[in-house]
Image 1 (cartoon, rainbow, N blue to C red):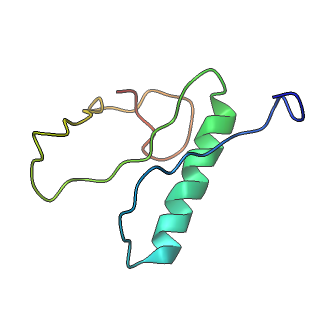
Image 2: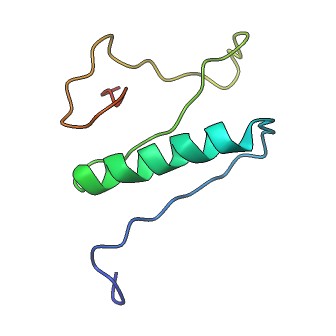
Length: 76
């Protein structure tokens, strides 16, 4: 914050594999754009699970996006 108060920081604490790196990069770029549009919010990039993992829990987005950004940026 001291060096750049308007900086956007990404934290990627996961070790998942994504075979389509270009699509993943597009989603990460979209996430950063959303974070720049909504500096007062935390933006989470998630994927649809292929099976439930009840030990980890999950995040449920609203059915409709109502944040001022293009795409599928939705409150949780």
